[in-house]
Structure formats: structure tokens, C-alpha cells
Length: 126
Figure (cartoon, rainbow, N blue to C red):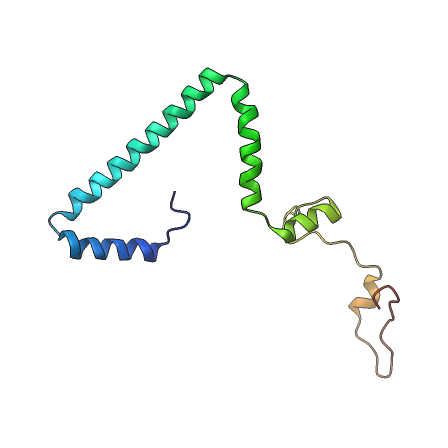
């Protein structure tokens, strides 16, 4: 519920409420707001349950496209590219690091170059 509201905003609302309502009316106003939010949430849950009962299995068919639209809102291009290139999500690895393909020659990358030695040349990279 408070996905877009941070603690700073809540603190500002409380301080503004203290100035506008005063310390004697603020607790009753906060209780009223909490009760109203709880009541609206109960109404929404009741409406969803009633739709589930009346529509039956069609409710799930209706819900699937809505879930797809919600996923589009949270679209992450990096995750999509990683998924389509390597058929993995960026955090498929247990340590939480992105899944990347293994390097071609690990030994050449691990040791430092000697003095006068030329760096390896990769014709695919140029």
C-alpha cells in the first residue's frame, strides 16, 4: 500500500497534521483514516470474492491478461535481454549475481601480462 510513499513523506504528513488539527484532535483523525482505509480494503476484498464466486473459472482467465499488463509496468530491459539471450533471469544464480556466459580462455585473463608481452587479440571484439 505504501509503495510510493516513504518515511519522509509520512513524517511530513504527521507534522502538517499536528499544525492543522492540533495535538488533541490528531489521534482521533488518524484513527478515522485507519478505519476508513481498512473498510475500503474489506469492500475491495469482498467484491473480488463475490466476482470469483459468480464468474468461477472465467475469473482466472480475466485475471491473467491483467497480470501481464502489470508486468509490463515493471519492465526491466536488462532482465529481459538477459532472459532472452541466456534463458535465465539475472538472479538465477544462488549468489544473486547475474548469469553470464563463461569466458573463452580463463587462464589468459587471470595472469598479468609480462613486460613487453602483447595483450591477446580477439578478432570478434573488433
